[in-house]
Length: 394
Length: 231
Ligand code: HEM
Ligand code: HEM
Ligand code: SF4
Image (cartoon, rainbow over all chains, first blue to last red; front, side):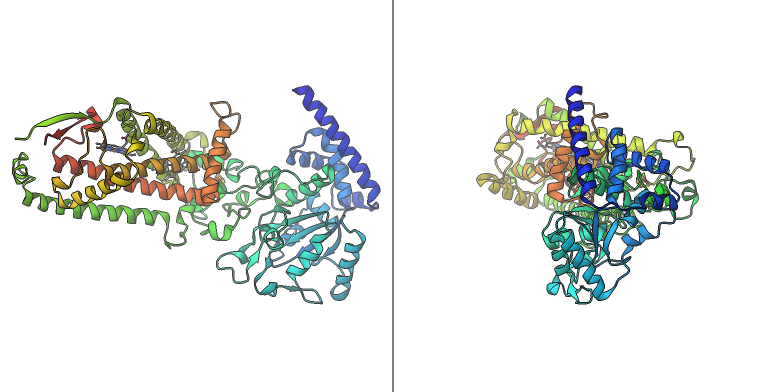
């Protein structure tokens, strides 16, 4: 068994090395990545530490650390086209505004972003041109990252972008056609986002549904940069997307928030925050009673937080809202009450309300039937000591 | 005076099943609603001092295991028991007619309307309308419960080797039926209410039969026997 694993690992490493060499030859070197890192306050040592953490995040053994560092450097050379559709740009913002960016954020900022609506210098016609040029030059080689959902009603006319006012649908089709890989980030691109929640007037759909493709999805509102960088690094190392479940990479979305939560001990102890700002909130108790949806959500916020792993919603003191689960806006609401307070569609009341109504119906029904039986039985002589009366009747 | 004949209706295993189910069901219902609405809040701040939710969930899962084992035994008896239920529980042909007749009887109280049930079987309406529901609901509780449990079960903490796959694949059935974890949880909650609804009706009907039929119906679950009036 052990022998077999060792052999497999060896052949995997060989393949991986060959691929890295190939990529290094293929994409022109970009100078200054390491300088940019040290400019941002990250030493070589810090970078290697990060590579080790990243390998662990991707569930790779320690021998991969060096290779992850190499892949991170290559990642800065691969051309990326970053598209925005119907969304709030919050995913980009969460990346750009990180006060204390970690290596993941820096890599994403330093990515060879050949086209990114928000951060690129050119605009209008010249922006279009740069997109066309990149697509022509790196045909079949660039990575396309999609942010935001695509409105599909009225032929997608709800969303028009760029100087030629093409619809989002057309643009997405055109760009994803020649991409080496498509990654959908954020809840909108992955599942449709709030604009796709009921009644969805614009017919917004996720990238995969709108285009009928099968991209990796990195849901979250915003997504976690570690998950995106991990997916890109994995793609560079092995030439394929990581194992997914329901489209989400398993390394990031394989565990439930509730099972990795720093407040979990308080849940088991029965120590809950009752309302915002109470004694329990100060002591960092479990947020179950104020609507934490951690028990229903798969994500890695508790393992790899934002801002260099300093923050995540639960660490900051608000419950999980389930933003990496499909249709969370519809399903997880109300966000600050337990899931039992959810108004069920169709009956427009909570599950407990339905339950008590059922009990009420049964109580009334049983009461009426009992009285009815009593009087009817009296007439028939049922309540006599023995059955003689109604026996006679028969 | 009419004469009575003592008939055998429930064998020992079924009676044991019934009361084990009774205890486990109540344990599950109480702890389940506690999980949904935990009202005891401890504020010691030292988690080693209390383990309330942990114990409540433990009791829920112990009750659940009992219910699941009973369900499996029940399904076995359903086909291979002394009185194989599958022969008369489905509302086919005369069974459907019997059920309607029984429904009529509950309102006319006329003994002539009561279907001629032979000594070995439950009457059609009771069996069809209530027990099947309780059993089907229990099966749904099992798969939705397993779906909620499966993220916490892995190779290290299962008692049976391969237990994690049992939880995982049973849970996947729930995903196929209900779609996602939120719906599964809500469904678990709703079915809990539905089961309570049916259990209340079940207990009412048993008491009602005891009172109006005067055939000692409730003693079925204690002694296995009831009395039938000789015609
Ligand atoms: C048959 C096997 C059963 C299994 C495996 C099972 C398992 C579970 C699990 C895993 C949870 C979630 C607890 C948590 O996340 O902390 C749960 C919750 C619950 N269970 Fe069960 N359970 C079973 C039967 C029952 C029965 C018979 C009832 C009641 C009649 C019941 C009522 C509930 C309720 C009300 C909840 C709370 C759901 C919510 O939060 O909305 N369960 N159960
Ligand atoms: C005080 C409470 C209860 C009483 C007096 C009672 C009484 C009875 C009786 C007399 C029968 C046999 C009916 C017949 O053969 O015609 C029966 C069967 C049954 N009861 Fe109950 N019951 C009680 C509580 C419950 C509860 C809480 C549950 C469910 C969780 C339940 C589920 C069932 C089922 C499924 C059967 C048929 C199963 C079989 O034959 O194995 N009962 N009960
Ligand atoms: S805060 Fe949320 S995720 Fe954490 S233990 Fe409580 S309910 Fe679970």
